[in-house]
Image 1 (cartoon, one colour):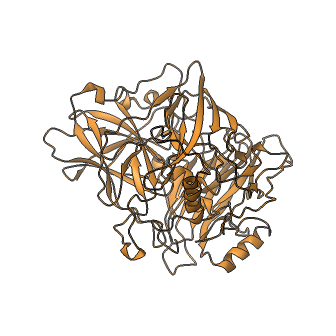
Image 2: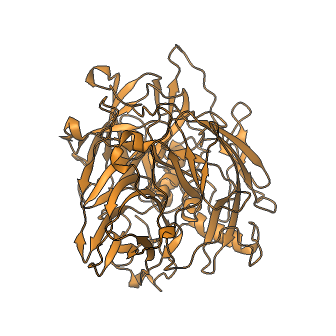
Image 3: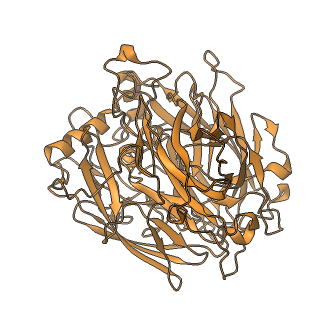
Length: 591
């Protein structure tokens, strides 16, 4: 919920970043040499560029740029040395991703910065600024240590380079993952600006033979501030979305929604691999032929082939007429192209009820599906890989293995000055509390409710090898998306209703419905999940709502996984010794 509609007030920090970018404090390349080029509306939608591993290693350099588009929106992008923007990274189970990230921003950082690391845990730079960047490898079951998938303290500041070494487990499920910027407090703006891309672990055709030989399309949906916002708050209505969306960077702006074009063969079957790389916008996808929903044969959610964790080493198909993909989720499905008799064929996202306090996610097209006989318009087929693909990382988990039960809940508080002061006191006096809009929380039942700061001690401590059942409640009047780094979870029940064992899937992101207005005592909407820490690399990482505006504003917490053999652990946490003031807003979690 916001004091002003998001299309008018996108957050103090976001507006500040645009102002800094416009003034030249961030890198601005000359016209004609745009580091973050974006296609025109109505363009043909093609696959992102591809980079494949060789001999067990994918070695790549990313340069990080910022620019401002003609509508005054700040754009962010990861670009390779040969000018490929946001390439899809293709890795095999067991491969190593060797990635060097260089922050190409120019100019001096602002005088006030925020320290998020101490001498014992520095990972890159000490101080966070509006120009900082890092990478999160979303959904990957990899190490949270420095130079791995560490988002708590990893900072790459202007002019600096940082090296990532990500080793993909040999039993990592084959499917779609993704990478994106994840500096707490400014993640929402970076992801809305386009700092994201797809990552595939190869081998899905080995587990799901139905996709073998089908042309595969990689479709990345992103959101961004409105290109054509209403002129005033009075023009807001349920028909005006909070954010524009794009498909493979092809914009679909409000209010006319000109769709891009996907070219297919008449009646041809294709394998569509969709990443919801939005910061705040949900997707509920349908393919409509002359207004009639078409069956979509789902073969994977969140990188895990459906039905593949039952010990058979093979996937199963789930047929649906629409596929809901929460913020940060992925879905992979088979689509049959229209016949020549179909007059109108569209890929759509449907209206989504996010609650009385939530965003407005309207019905709108993503792409027009057009027929072609040009083989060059059809993507290459997906094929089995020669290597062994087990992909059953999460199999074999049952009730007898559960080591702990916990309840965690989402909640919000209206962001008055009194509430901000109380949040700062609760967080330790000198810690950051949100500076406007709502304060967002994710809290373990029985603990004090405080907004997140990177230096906080872990809210949960567990041990490598544990299997835990958590109930995730939502006490707020808008939906929230539960996401945890490094591990997946199995959904056991929704709102207290058990999911039949044969329908239980493994996810890394899942939506929890909103609480009705005037219902502050429950029972609250909830999911019951089973988290698998058997293969988790020991270390500290985070769980949070993946609506990044909520995460930036405090809805995140740390979890520590101790090594199997450890009896005691001494953990040094980040420190925040300097509190940034940028105008009236701090660098920390502000909206």
